Image (cartoon, rainbow, N blue to C red; front, side, top):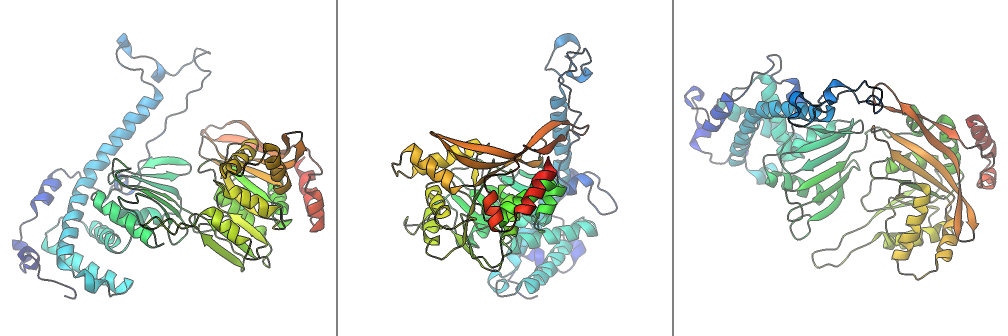
Length: 525
């Protein structure tokens, strides 16, 4: 067969019935529980661990004398209180043990077949084939190895095994099924044995695992090498991206004690629009119309929020209101913004090389943008002295520029901007920095991730001016939490604060959008 080397005698043996099964497979098979006869896999084998969450206890039940029996001490007073959280933990551990036993046989089989495949194929010749031809070649060899090794598997299990090995050789290994799912927001790999995902705002443990830390490290290097970066002991921290723009962070030993740690922030295949945010109740229809006016009227905008609050997603949706004729330049650490306009220039920072030379910082990119005749500058994340250069650009004719930063409220966002400018060592007085902020930023949009996993735009705030040494802001829209439904989901509503004529009214009138702005504000009252 194409690509074969001289293989061990056990692999080249022709009479298949006479070949003894591998001892490791036989030992693992003795512990293998019964599987579903239809497709060879139980539901727990295929799906992430999703233990049933018990009903959230009412904090007022104890005061009313109606506390749940599970929250009372056991008879005799011995041992810890049987709280709902303890019961949930025991349930999760029991399910995890079942899935671990069911997957032992599969992973032992996969390891044996993979090692036999590596001893059989010629990787140099395989690298010369295209993706389709290489897949067919590997599929044929794996099918023959499964028959020679006398593996006890159903047809569905064998197909699943072949696909996993194809992913190991040509793709991202065990991560491929997770990357294919569009409902996953984050993938968190804590060493070879534990992989977590975020679905619907909740973190779940999966039964996905790697053969060892060496395989995990190889996949990390495969990911970062695609964007010209590296990760090893001399450079153990790396930011990168996948071809679809998903953000990747890798931290390797010796900094990561329990093995390489990989974090992937996935983006949906279908790009979210402002209409989608309204459907998800992230913003009210009136608030969405106001945000549309802010984007189209070229107001300088800062999106503030915590980690995972949806800042980049919101920034992507707001760029849909940019006029197609405008020249837009984006600056990012790892290019993840996906603008739909025809005239977009994407810039990305660069880490230093092995000699410590050649680093290009975010500030270098923002300063260079000013020489590229931009009409708008969009900074993926402001986290350092580049804040000064961005504010300078906003205040010198580059209206409509945007950026994101980490802060918990619009007021804290202003304080963080002031702190980041101070980090640059400019020696400017505080009042001068605040005057620059007031003259540059028009609107601050606050995004938040609530405790039930949902994401909401909690504030649309405009920067009004400076009174003495204090920056004055006023809220146009705020999100009020009203309670919680029977399923533990937070309920609330976006309400207008009654501001009928915001500070950027004249800018909206200049672009002919004052009627749209007035109708949106009137409808929100």
